[in-house]
Amino acid sequence: MMPVSAILTVFTLVFAAIVWLRLLSVCFDDSTFAGFIALFIPPLALMLLMPRWRQEKDLYQLLGLALVCLLLSLTLHL
Image 1 (cartoon, rainbow, N blue to C red):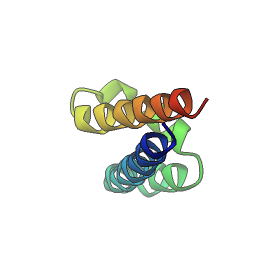
Image 2 (tube, rainbow, N blue to C red; image 1 turned 180 degrees about the vertical axis):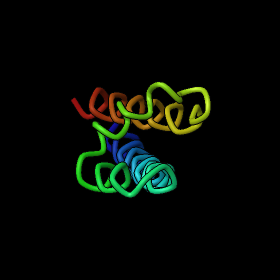
Image 3 (cartoon, rainbow, N blue to C red; image 1 turned 30 degrees about the vertical axis):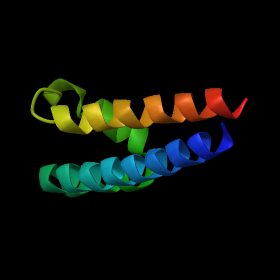
């Protein structure tokens, strides 16, 4: 199952990169301070966006997909 695990790891990295770029875009549109928080501390920026989760629903869905791919990859690797 190593090839499947490797493919899921690649998907995880791609999804995480897309989420991070989208997070940077949203936070820099909000304010410069929030943008720098997203640049250096992404989990804190995600928590700052929680009150507006309905507006940024696709961001959280893609993050969930990245986490699911990561968990499946780790499970298949063992």
